[in-house]
Amino acid sequence: MGKFMEMTTRLMNYLIAAALSLMAVFVFGNVILRYFFNSGLTWAEEVSRFLFIWLIFLGAILALRDNEHLGVDTLVRKLSLKGKKILFVINNVIILITLLLVLDGSWKLTILNIDQSSPAIGLPYAYVYVSGVVMSIGMAVIVIRNLYRLLSNKIDENDLVMTTDSEEKTDFDQEIKSIQGGTKS
Image (cartoon, rainbow, N blue to C red; front, top):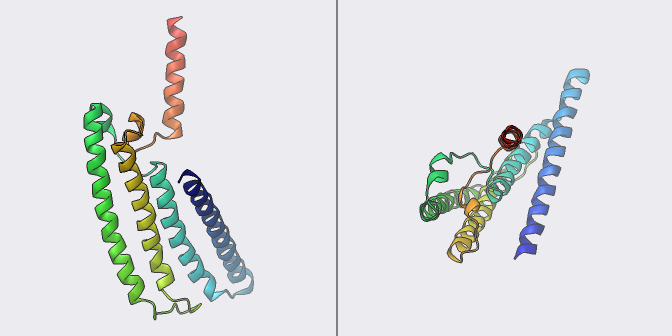
């Protein structure tokens, strides 16, 4: 399972990079065409919008996997190990319920829009709405895996806090420790 998760993560990273690159090329090309030649590519805006939607949803999956979503962890860090575990289960169950609602809505929109096509490129809107289905399933797999790891005692106490410190805070904390270590000597 670890190899599969690693391969899917790598694939999603490549897809996100490709989407971002294509978006940059399409938008920049359109700006140049409009500024210098007073024309543009009508399909470029639409494709960029669709790529941006996919980029966001794939990025959300990766952010959940790495605990990089925005969160407030002040209370969680002060709880005992048992309290952290209980809150971890509650948080993940709420997330799972929310993902099931998003999955249901995205699936209904996907089915509803199979026959509806975008005006510029003629792509069925179902290809856009299915991104919500992919995101919901991907995030649900991560949440279920996290709950399994907790129930089988394969999770570290630090992983029970569902946020990650920013690089600046980590650097700041290390600097404070080195200053405090230097004054004690």
